[in-house]
Amino acid sequence: MAEKKCNKPELLQEYLDSHESHELKVELDRHLAECEVCRIEFASYQKLFQSLDETLKPPVVKPVSEQLGKIRVALGSQRVSTVKNLESNLEGFLAAFAKPFALAFTILLIAGLAAILFRNRPTESVLPDKMPSMAQTALNLEKNTVEIILPGPKNSLLIDGKNENLDKLKTFAGNRVYELPAGAAMFVYTGQSRIKLSDSAKFCINANNFELLQGRAEFKLIGKHDDFKLLTEFAQVQVLGTVFSALKSKDQLFLRLEQGKISIKTADGSVMMLSRPGQSCKIDADGRFVDSGEPDKPGKTTSWPVKNEEKPVDHSPETKGDSGRKLENSF
Amino acid sequence: MTNNPSSNSDNDHALIRRLQSGDTAAFEPLTKKYWHQVHFVCLKYLRDVELASDAAQETFVSAFTGISSFDLARDFRPWLLKIAVNKSIRLIKKDQKHRTLAREFQPTKPSSSNPSEVFADKQLIDDCLARLEFDEQILFVLRHGLDLAYDEMALILEKPVGSVKGELFRARRKLKEMLENVQGKEVETVGREEMQ
Image 1: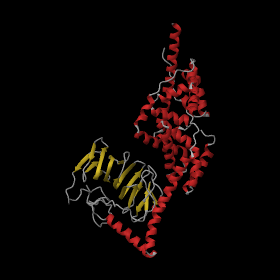
Image 2: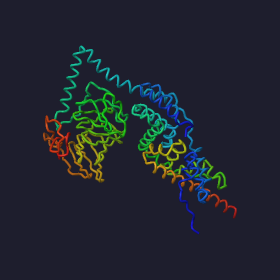
Image 3: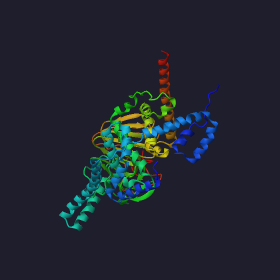
């Protein structure tokens, strides 16, 4: 005799999960009238569900004062440290100089830093050791708050396609796409580690990974970052204690190691490690390693795409060699 | 499900709005309200009371320091529990021993020889749950322990709703079969003893 089978094996469980939905009840009653299997099973499942609800009910556990205190302190210290950094830097300037002079000096300082950082010097690391003094709000990759921004032509970010003023941005939300305007740079700080974004970088920041969709990101990660990954369309990079750069264009990813080691796994499953300072590699849109750069000899220019100097951004298809701004024709 | 989900959500959002506007005192009522659920999830993942307390504390710190990015159009509880799960998973990765605990339990004998009572035997159910795969156990915790809906579970586990439902239904069938098999062995043993 053929074993009887149910044609709606999920209906019993769906109904019991629904907290007795009327619609499902009607459907279930109709089904039970026709299905002997479910008629036998229904009582068992009812008891099982009830037992599971009772067995797995969470015990009433309340936070103790010490735990509440630690949360309170963590919340308070985050607000205080951000305000204190800003206050102490400003106090230093204002105490030494008259206000108008301090303001002029500050503007010159920012302009000078911007000139130094944005000048085309591909052979040098562009990660400063000291933070510019006008810190704004704090971005910590793990805690996800903004620390410092160097504005470009516009003090704004594109967030999922919409223009947002940087002054109002308090945190980066996970899984959202942000895009820097042309000419802007942004620093992401977490402890002593930092990431510099530039060249119209388009990115997502989550708790332990950073996704680069286009543009330039330079990384200096100090301390333990076992879980941190750089994700791109063509490859993912595991950090092993490191300073490195990534330049992502529409059809290529360029990686260069400055210090430490990185491990790269491409979309086609190949794995490579960069372990010598100056070593670099390119990965194409199919996730294949195209070229493996050797460390530069002393005095030799790096293998970063050459940037046209003092040219405005040109988005026409004929533009060549404009690294970081228009990359389609630069390799 | 909570008795009045709409007003419950409104209460949470009122407190969250206060936090977002800088009133940090609002963290305390939210913490007290959800601590036992967050702690429960962390404990199920970590199986260590002290680690679970630390993970729960870190969960609330992360949630409140990132509260300005919370979208008031969504429910707070599944968002908070997702943070708890992610924190716990990160801690598990640091300590691989937690992965093996699922297989260490042996089921006790059913307290009753009546086949229909095996599904009401909570101790037996607890033992059989412990023998399931870790991911299956978590489905039961979220659905039966915390009374989360399928879409809320999907958000927390970062899986499609269809996958969550399918996995949950299969896990329940598996548990049911385990219970029926235990019952079957007990009946067979009793039968053999009677024959001697």
